[in-house]
Length: 586
Image (cartoon, rainbow, N blue to C red; front, side, top):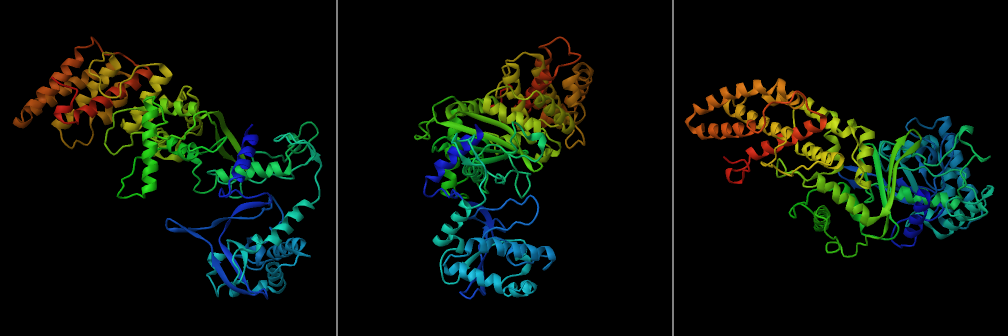
């Protein structure tokens, strides 16, 4: 199913003239420099093909003759490669191994270029015949520093002629003939297309662009031991052209700056539609939305896209139609989401979801509806991205400390509408106890968990009519903390730092002592003539909350502790809004 849909995506994009999808026999690689040759094969310049990305120069993505797979040994590419193959030297100089690589590059080139009458190929032939590998560094440093060249990939250009040598018509024809005359593999029935008598793929192109994966790429289809052989076959029955199509399509989705992938924790998520859809450009913004940027600081196109995503999320959260916002968005189109994670030389399929786009949109809308929470600060995102939420469960708030199991479960819960992982509540409460902090993101996640997993009703902001004890105790703790802050400004440690976790887990052991201390705090506040009304205000709130229950529970369950933290967050937020906007009135 996954390979078939990737194959269909390749066919669709290949039919689009400006898609940039490489044709069969090519691959998109990181190319940094073009070696400019004169007709005699002499190097006259080195053209820098790199592009500016932030403060760094990064290699350009170019379609070149298909890369060989280097699992071991020496294998050269045709008309492009790194310095050790093109020049026979690298940072270690012209070593014996590098001389073998240069020889392999020359032999690979000759096997294709022989009997082809082309000026570009003739120049490269002369270059390879006359190149002195021992003088590589001295020769190339006339043009650019050797440190910049030594680890880069090179292509060739003929001086004064536009385009690269590998892009010339005669060269492409010769390369296709070379592919056709390679030692034939046994014919098979392709498991992707179902076609009979198709040449079996020798090896599948590595998949690159997965966060944390090897730079050389990884495989989602591979065999390397008899333990994986079944039914007398030592390879998957995938035809050569089908293997090229699905790997090229996935590498296209995972390319740098792709709008059709996002990274959450250790999972790289790629997504696409069965046919052209604006959802392919917007879905990343739905799973990882950003605040609508200021028009003064942002390009108009970026602002319009962010504004469209924000409006789309607003509509989805309210259960409204999205057609008015994106008129050409067809909710019936089939949509696919693939989650990948690194696993040595292979890639793990963490999840695979295929459904109508409209169903995915409703599930994303439900997720943000359940997450909706009054914000602690105005600059916090109205629609928190999943990666920021997950960081609230991790030590030091770092994404690398997020549990991979939790991350995968959260993404699947959003996409399927199923319950959130059961470990989410424990992770949130654990971080709150460790850091003594109930943030907007944690309160939102607690609310979403209790609504989805426990079918509880949890308000977006302070609900003064609510009477369940965990919520009231959380509110009470927030008022007691605020009274202490007013009585002892700048205290090194507040009751939150010392008792927040225990107040939620074992209220009976904590609250009697806290109430006694609060009497002293309120008395100190009353002595300040400017705060007399404030002391009366806190006293009335405390009295009203305590009167709603007879005793403090000895223990509270994890779900009750979650509700306690939400009550604490709501009341804390309400105490810091202007008096006219407070829901806590006396």
